[in-house]
Length: 210
Picture 1 (cartoon, helix red, strand yellow):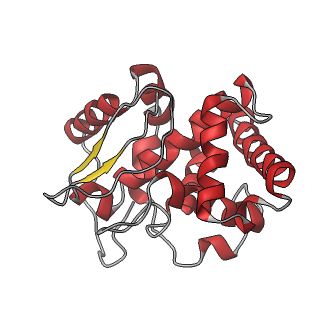
Picture 2 (spheres, one colour):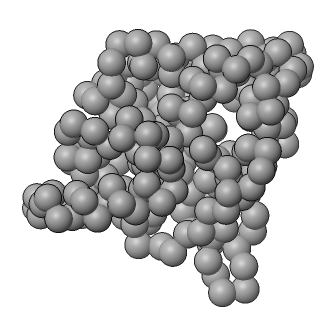
């Protein structure tokens, strides 16, 4: 993402592109990295300028209510600690923009479908939509999704991988994500929430993405 205080930004060179892909492949599997970073994905990502109010308006493919839901999901996946989290750097706006410019209609529909499914399960489990749930309930819902429990199925988890991948991609192309030393631990069992900063101030999230 662009730093909104910058007027010009260096072009994405082949060398920097290769370095970025190598770094992302260390987080994702090679296949997932290829899905997220293929074509013009990196150039589009770097060109994105974060917005302060993207959750309050409709996106390019998501309705306003879905943008707000995405913001809450981003906050659960990479929460704010000593540094800004995914929601604070407009990763939800990035995700909407990236899906619109770099992904197929089918992939866009997959992203919409999993948001609707999360809301359906939230209504069943807690009698309210995801955005009305408290942080623990939101965490529990995403944990159930990872574990394919409480009404979620394997197709839902597959669709969720796209959302998760774009959240990580977006966060690491933000100024905050690119400049902070964040360590993500692959933990068996899928999404297990976040772990507080350690004594050295390094962000550690126990998120088993792929």
